[in-house]
Image 1 (cartoon, rainbow, N blue to C red):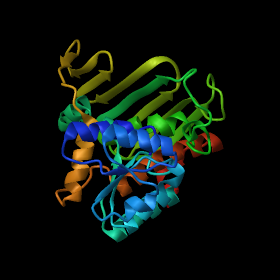
Image 2: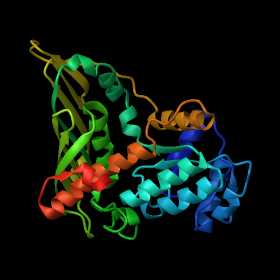
Image 3: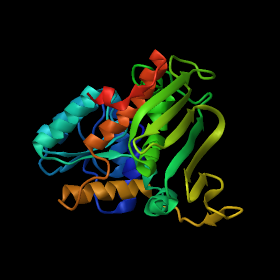
Length: 319
């Protein structure tokens, strides 16, 4: 378990379609508190969970660097796996754990909940009305000043390569690919300006999509507040979204954009329910191992671009 475990466990309870059977983490105090909160068994070892035939699936919130080890073990035990993004820190690990699940014929689903937000679903359902997609800009920012724990793997260069871009930027690189299509090349810049430690707290990417469109993505842990922005520009219409103003659409020939009401949806429940259905043989996860490996490659290409000072093809990382 990690700090995201409670978020997913709360969503499971809201769903009401799954049962939390057991939990494991190395900290006995942490697992006992989790077990009491969610009325499940506190397993003394991970193997105890893997050897329990009544348990069908594992929700894996371990550090990125052990995703391969923990997921492959679950696959060998015949357990389906829901793994929060990113799939791993390296393409080699991502491919290996994807292969382990495929060989064991178990479901592997990745948690990319941002693409499920109702405003992005609305745009996706009407993307054909935008005409030629030409450009997009996105920003995902949070204030982490005084809020980070340098003992946590999430805030170290070894545990989270690329810092803010791999930790939260990948959510919006995914949305950009979801709306504009796959990315073929990346140019990146990463800096550390405000936060202590050894990891970037501000990062920018220029993404070249396979359809010719260009997009920019900025991610920051050093801004004054939390903020999300996603603007999509097409020849016939454009979409403007930000967390304070919601979604607006501007059609060619109109003088100002019109607001589009989008009810807030429970994205984490939706992805877990989809995982549950896939485990039952009803459909497949929207974000599986292969797609999530490609998503990771986009961020790693940006990291390599910043390090080497050149444009990097995503195919280089996937080769």
